[in-house]
Image 1 (cartoon, rainbow, N blue to C red):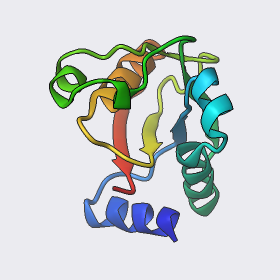
Image 2: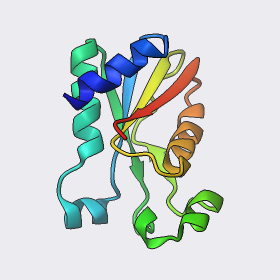
Image 3: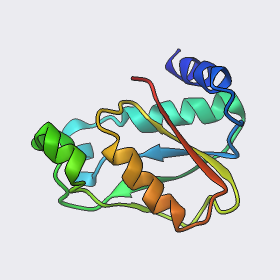
Image 4: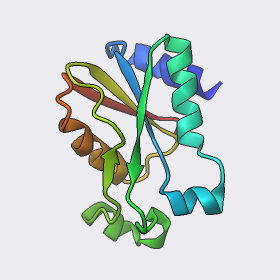
Amino acid sequence: AMASAIIAQLIQFNWPIPDSIVALRRSPIRRWIGGKEPAVQLAKEVANQLGRPLITPIRSEEGALPQRALRYSQRKEERRERLFLSKREGGDQTLLIVDDLIVTGATVREAARALQAVGPTKIYAMAFC
């Protein structure tokens, strides 16, 4: 249901159908503590429904501070956790970053920065909330 809502928004905004979907992963320590990765699951569902590939998720570096450890002003000013691609995928493509939640936009901005290295034509981002 959440993937369908994201796709409906994509159509409503008249955005192009992306060539590939990009998932944001939690840092390894946060995956160990929290278990599930809702953003990755959501991205997989969006990719499935659109019939598009899910490219290697963007990962956080080890030991990065989670957003919840920062005050709101710190989240906006400084991104403590550096994101990087597991592989170089997505060049010359329209990419859609899928996250489960966007609060300040810091994670999405950092993800777009990491993706710029592969030379996509366009980068869009959407979240369920």
